[in-house]
Image (cartoon, rainbow, N blue to C red):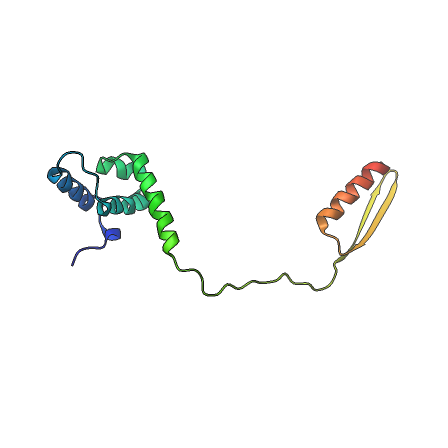
Length: 130
């Protein structure tokens, strides 16, 4: 039984590339099976290390990996169920901000306002008074 590609070692893939290089005639393209094995190794050991070990162009290996990743993503099944969780609405939030300085006091009481809005408002009012 042949070993799965994702379980191959660097040495096994090197041996496959060398066997292919010795048998090929002219400038034939590297078979998809070898590119797939190289891509799997690169995912585990890194592109540069794999390209050097297999005597491949690192840029080409990276591009082949990207193409393989996108084609695998396209083949993935869409989710059968997606749960959407609505934010909790426990009523309107209410808060009071009190600021005290040399020139006086500032008190802001708000209902249903975000904290970021309150901070901006209080800073603008305080700067105007100070």
